[in-house]
Image 1 (cartoon, one colour):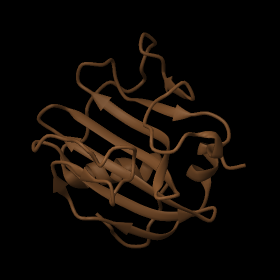
Image 2: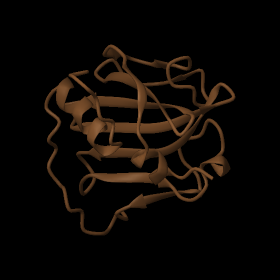
Image 3: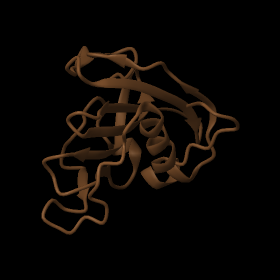
Image 4: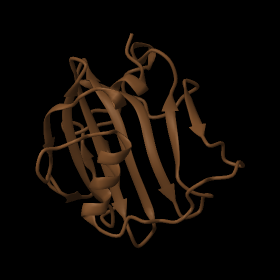
Length: 159
């Protein structure tokens, strides 16, 4: 059984950081249920790939400083699709930084879906949020936040 916290705590190997791009995220880069993950042209994104616990993992980093939106979505590749385990997020219209996390055994998370009854929002929407300020001002900070959240340690700089 592999859980979200196991993936976060595990040593990461074969870390690769993709280039920043704009617009839709092709299914080949981050395979969720749709042909692509639609984003407007004002959003930038990149994919961080690594192996942990014998699993091929990816983090989709989405960033729009003008709208104060950030997401770092962690998934495990399985059968040409992803099991989404966590999304670390900030949206200006919400009360602060939060996560949408799957609970329990990752193998029970359905393939290709971002949200469902297996996901919990922490803290809950109406609860106090410890971090309220948007601190992601550039691409390097966006990658660093994903590295920190998912404990992706690198030798040298991948920013």
